[in-house]
Image (cartoon, rainbow, N blue to C red; front, side, top):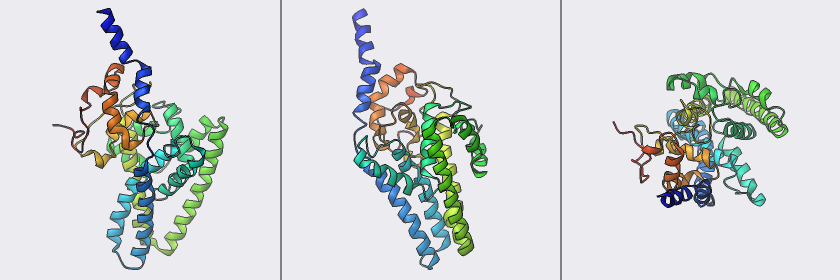
Length: 298
C-alpha cells in the first residue's frame, strides 16, 4: 500500500511535471509568426484597397476588425521569447513579430512586454497586476465599458514598479512609441477621417475588448493568487478557434514557454498533474482537444 502511494507520488512529482512540460516548449512557433505578420500586412492592405476604391469601407472595417482580434496573441508569444527560445541570434524575430503584430491594436510592444511580465509575476494582485481591474469586472458588459474608456491605470502601475530599472526604461520607451502612434493616427484622421475611424479606431477598440475578454477576464475572473490557483480551465458556447483556445490559458501561466499552438497537446499530457494540484476546472478538461471539445455543454 505504501509502495503504491510512493510510486504515485513520484509519478506526479513537480520534477516529473516540469519534465513533461519541457517536451512541449521547444518547437518554433511558425504559426504565430505567420498570423502576426500576416494580419498586419492584410490590415495595411485595407488602407490601399479602401482609399483607392477597390474595396468598400464596410468590407475593410470587417477585415480590419478580424485582424485586430488576431493581433495580440503573436506579440504575446514574442513577449515570452517563444520565437528565439533563448537563442540571442533569433531575438530579432521576437522584436519583429512583437512590434509589427501590435500595430493593428496601436499597442507599444516594449510597454506591453514589461507590463505583461509583471502580470505573470503578480497575477490577480490588486496592487501589482495591471490586469486586475479587468479581472475584477463583474460581467462582460463591465469589461466592455472598461476597455472602451481606454487605459486608465498605467500611470499608477508605473509608480508601483518604477524601482525596477528595466521596467522603467521599457515603460518610458513604450510611452514614446504610444505618442508616435497617436500622432500618426491624428494625421490620418485629418487626411482620411472615415477610413481612420473604420479601419483603425473602431477595429482596435473591438480588438482590445476581445483581447481583454478572453485573455484577461475569463481565465482569471473569480480567482485568487497562487501558482495553481490564479488561472482556470473554462468553457464557452463557441468553438475554441473563436477564443484563441484561451480556455487553456492556465497552462500558459504555469509554463509560459509552451507555445500557444502546442498547448492542447500539453494539456492532455499534464492533466494528471493538474488534477493532483487542484487547478480550478481541471476535472472538466476533456481527454481529447478538437474544435468542439471545449464548447460548453448545456
